[in-house]
Image 1 (cartoon, helix red, strand yellow):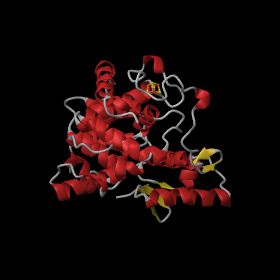
Image 2 (image 1 turned 135 degrees about the vertical axis):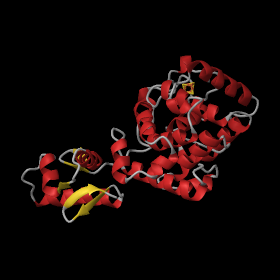
Image 3 (image 1 turned 90 degrees about the vertical axis):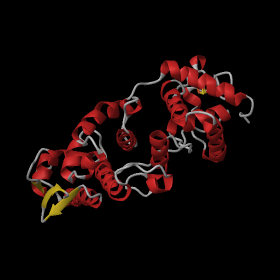
Length: 304
Ligand code: SF4
């Protein structure tokens, strides 16, 4: 197994490369506040880093502190979430801010177990916030770290082989033991997103090529996807996720909310049949369950 005497060399090679090639993001700036880092982690769950980099400053400008975010109404926070998608994250983030203000005097906890209890967090985000906000040496494995780590360890593994999870965790622990964990993780993430990519590994320019079990063996044709993506539910060929986003966008532009008929018309369903109406009720129910909107006797508006 790849560890032992090569650990120090691999870590040095990676960190030297990172020193010269690190990607610049607002949440990595030395003046990024813990609050800004936490918000970025929620945004990065389902939005590309380049988009988060563009929109995060606007959000922080609108809600400069965790107290300001905790005071925000659902409508205000969803308005500020424009362009990021998956709007229920905005509501959960605001709810998390309220808990942090109420139970932790506005200071983001460093304890992973406490972080996991916050709305919208989950194991990965709790570990990432503990690490990137507080420097806690805990295991953070995102899709890029999983891919680079798996390839480093084993040739011919699927892209993120789950049977290697324990070994991968051990590998990560070994590498962060004597390093700044934030720096090491960010280096792995950048390597995975720029060089050791899912469908194309540019091993000839990779700082780890002399230590990697998969070096020069990854081609587009032999990439084995980890798993088939779960099929998204669609209507008229468009994922329901995007329909929900379209309805939220309509509500952003209508100060008094919309009747269901108005919303259906704006979504280009002027003569909705029963199937369309039932589908639309499902869209409304999903957003209401997430606390994003309320259906006030047929009039849709953002939740209070
Ligand atoms: S040598 Fe190739 S497969 Fe190995 S980590 Fe680098 S880019 Fe990925």
